[in-house]
Image (cartoon, rainbow, N blue to C red; front, side):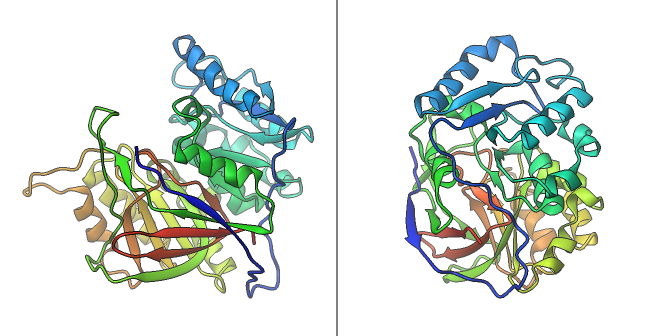
Length: 357
């Protein structure tokens, strides 16, 4: 299997913004209480044994567990009615005894609860780690944009039972449990899971520049992003105001990242064109694009995912990397929304260093 490695560098890194607004949760410690709730899709009974294995991983690491009511049910693509999901998530986000929240999976309809979440109240509350990807991006993005919380784009809870020692899970723990005087560097994987139907197929990892060049490049800025299928739906709303975030952190720069899970190349073009028209790409330091979870189209007469990226992003005067270790095609890095980051690309090995600043 393909792993990327993590190292710590003690750093006195500072930025040139006088007012710091991103709030980082405190590190997790043994005996801390982790809340588990499903703000999008729940876990149907057939998958309860898999959920129990994942929870056991947390308990074996020394954490206490608080299971929500919106968890072990699935009806019409959600764990519960939208008001119940919103109430439970708000309860977990504001309860002082809960130190972190790990949703079990993504889904399709997290967007239903956004207008029921009090992001202004959360902006005045102590932040706590919430980690996930896919449709959980719908929650993470506004938590960072509106409440100034650092949020974690990384594995959902159900990934914990696959192999608790794999690199995706290890990188998540490193961030959740690290003190804020440390920085985290994650390196590109050696191999990644093929997006074929077999989970046993692995192939060499190669991050690539969208401009087809192979020369080394470096860029830095604050990370923000998520699953393109989900966060593109927030464009033009207060829940997805990336241009405002770019203005707020103009001195630091902003690195947008995203990954596609289900969109066809034509759907990607439409989504990316919408984001371009809404000025998401106007003031970026760079873009990171995760591996496409859809099988790459090999017929040269048809549009493929790289064509889609080139059509919309190809003329942007910023560094753009694709096939990065982000998202649905394992292994995936854990990226902190709101954190300062430095990206280093070379043809044979690349890295992302994140700062608690």
